[in-house]
Image (cartoon, rainbow, N blue to C red; front, top):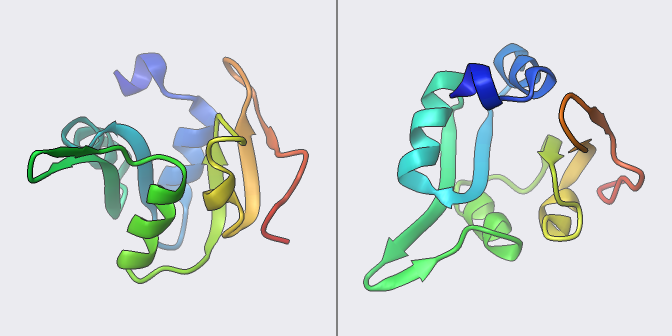
Length: 113
């Protein structure tokens, strides 16, 4: 799956990253955990069920989970939705945007700066 659907620049960035890595996604955490292992990610945050309630890991919930893990800032954040992920992007020193197949670019606005 990673070889077929992974964005090569993002995969290389994550695998070569010298510091801690976190995969934060709205995908179900059970699936995200498998992808995280393939990428060698240190920590995975995905959507979960708490009690009987679905907690979507999106927008502000990503920030809540990141802070619960003891992190207040990130060096680099990669997203394909700058609007939905604005709260997370605001915590980043550098924001990269996946904008279609094969394209990774600096985000037009760097909210954390």
